[in-house]
Length: 340
Image (cartoon, rainbow, N blue to C red; front, side, top):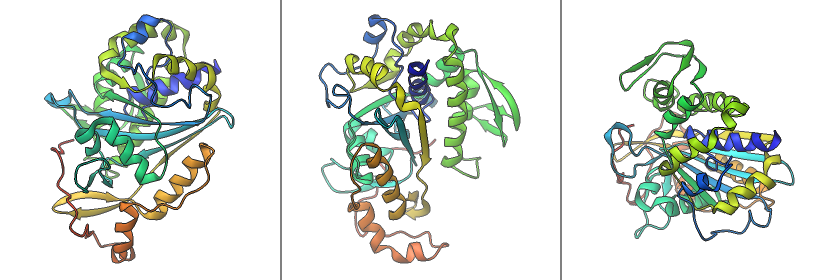
């Protein structure tokens, strides 16, 4: 059951677009594996060699609200798994965090969730890696609509909400409720009515994650997971190979022994008429230190576009009421619409 624990957590994270981790990794059949969009060639040998590794989890909004483009990665989480220390360290990244789009033709800073839209997973990995000073080895991207299928697969989930949630024509009153897939998707996506904003949404997504994980560990669902995997195949893409997915199950199940989940939190700022989250340098540095330590790497002082801009905006951090943040001429045009 230890092996199943890390697998279930990884499944839940991804499918809930909350923590999104490593894909649906309890593969009982090769046919199920083949239904996923995996890489044929390894982008890193860390898993092959049983080393600590990092994986960027991306929950994209493609397919929701009638969208047909690839969407923004409105859920982003960086996880590091260490099989020796049997520990997983994870950080949720605010979708509106100001970040340099690493790999773009011209140097510019935008909301970090635009990186996936502009340059897909390659740019998202480079952008997050630069911001936090952490090598990003692998990624998994999932269409957020897969959440609805997964919750229905386990017969719904029970959550206790500390506020009324209304979104997309569905209302979930304050209190304890059993949610079907469509309701869970609403509960996980609503952001604007929550006074905590995106941070509150992350908490609600984690609630659903835990509820799904508990059910996925039940034998009656584990035996049927290959059917779910096949159904979700087109909703998941990753640069992991099928062999590496198998090895995660065999070599990294102990990483679930200690699970350290964190949220990167920033300050509100207005830039060119758009709302951003500015991550303080000390916040990014603390996350970098913890993530690197779990990878077996020594601490490294961050020196990137984000920390350099912070250093030039001393008055912003000295005055709690200041919402003006200067990007000193860098392009900050948001790449696509920001409706959700």
